Image 1 (tube, one colour):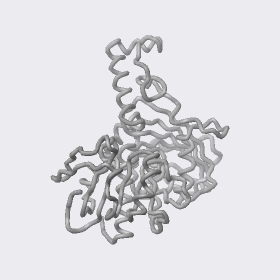
Image 2: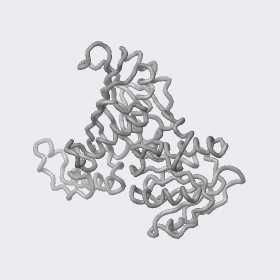
Image 3: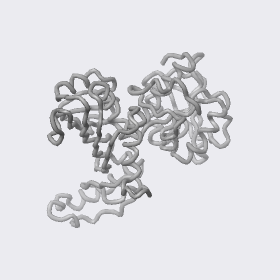
Image 4: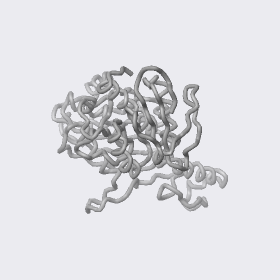
Length: 356
């Protein structure tokens, strides 16, 4: 534990040494989060590591041995099984838990929140647990909320183009190692044959990812739909966040050879007519959204907003009730770390009367 100031909230970060945890530590400092005491926790494997934060040396604690009392807000980025085990224990000890995993997202008593979209869902937190949405869902919610409010969203189709950092550090290393092998062997030979390069065996993404695209993320759901759980997350989470429980939605999730920032091709239908210019006017005022001409992952990497562009009339929808667009967003930053911290800021304000 480190005493940071004489005011603010007692904050803990579980999973502080991981890929998202690193980004969280940086954003906490950038946003000058109102911290009184700060604790970093992790598994026994990382316990004892000393992390520097704003001039303070903080020793990572083993969560299994830690005294959980006195924590006001705990931000989790440690995986679903860890969250299922520890979130109730932190809550029982008195902390509000902001969880980054999928463990609690669809629990009816757990708010699922995008900070710009449904902050009022944090007024009442029955289990003292709040869920952070999946990174792909996160990227499109600010746009869909603004457009739904203005024009009435009735149907959503999305194809995601997801970066390898969404598969963790091992996904990043797989792309790096495969790309290196291809360059060394003459990657341009792939113009003529996909077998021209002797790639290393995949270690995280299920197929070779360098110079390729893999339309499979997650696990096939055992419900006969032949969808993956990643694809169902976008539909189910969008319904909950937008308060549209019957929204028809379909998603195809694709992993692409990009290190960070997801892209989403979105086709949205509405109950009212809408033109691209009208949509741009609405989106230009939406919090957390930047309207641009050609949004790309490199544009979004390291940035806070979702970038939306290529907005055009959907020619497959009768009249003017459909739009097509492309959205990009940093999956590590807003897609995980930033939104969790923004949720914590709202909780600090609503439940501790501490302004972030």
